[in-house]
Image (cartoon, rainbow, N blue to C red; front, side, top):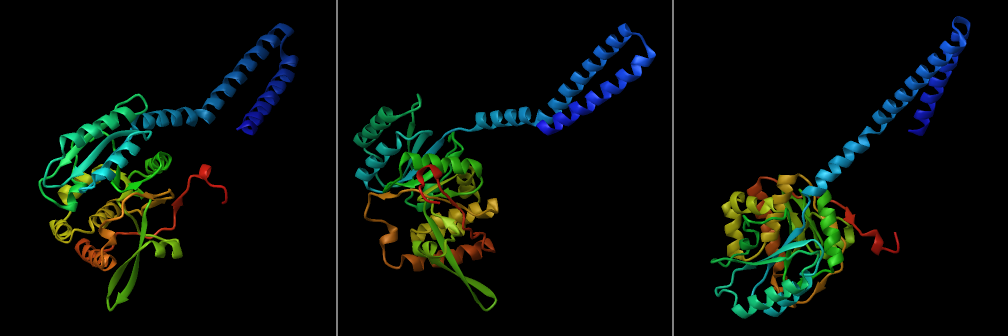
Length: 334
């Protein structure tokens, strides 16, 4: 931009010199001074107007960034739990102090409502640890039916656009959560998470058959198709879509088999966004020792889910990718 400005200035200076030579032969000294002042004023005006046109994008871009920044809010935690009150207390105590957190929604599907002592303890912890000059809201989303679909039930009064779906037995440092939230803001239509998984595909006749693989397949190939909702950000609109538009056959399958609600959500997000998920590197602290993944036949059941859902969707919406988001401030080697 400096070069273009210099060229324009040199062109204007040569123009002024030619006019001066012409004017010397035509008019007197007084008129020459008036003419020169006029030409200099015109040159300055041209430079200023040219400069504003060259740099005008900066002002417009700044306004766009300001508007975008004003729309950005914090995030809400959506935590699934089941009769692990010590783990729930530990997780809520940790995340309540994380930067950017606006609200915590505990998905409660137990037959008995949460006890007064539990609610009192958690509200006290959240009130004590809230940061950024704002009070984090804590809510129990009570469900009458025991179904894994409850973790994706629409929350109509949810203020934040970003939802951080997390299980009660996993803890990430607040810095990792904030980094994942920043990554999600750059791609709010896709799912951004810490736990990647891969599907293998093989052709059987005229159909494709998919096999669900665990972490070691991701480690070996560097590729993945989904990130699990046990630790992932996604837009709150997907809660509404899952609740109101997900095929009933898929939700019934999830309820009956007590599995694969996270795969169903991954299918939904990929189908709507047309984009692969984003894997974010983060240190995982598992504070629980039990869960569905520890039961026998887990991979086989999830393989059945993947092929069942692909048939219901009429295609495989999940896309493979090798992208990994890493916080360079925490990395010594590239």
